[in-house]
Length: 77
Image (cartoon, rainbow, N blue to C red; front, side, top):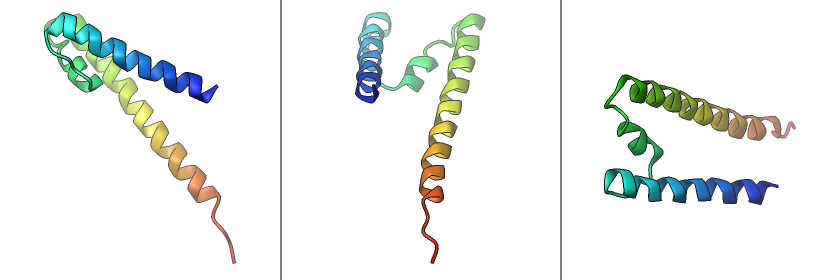
């Protein structure tokens, strides 16, 4: 299942970059650059806030899980 999720994630990135070419005239690969384009209205700012919050949560969860596994597998003498 893990390779399937990685392929889907990669496809979402390609689709988002293609859509940004159509919408903004340039290819934006970074999700943060795409979110920065939504500042024109109050709805866009709210969407940017929620997407930024989810981005922050994903980064924290990734960091905690990566550091927890290595810490839990330490060897004791």
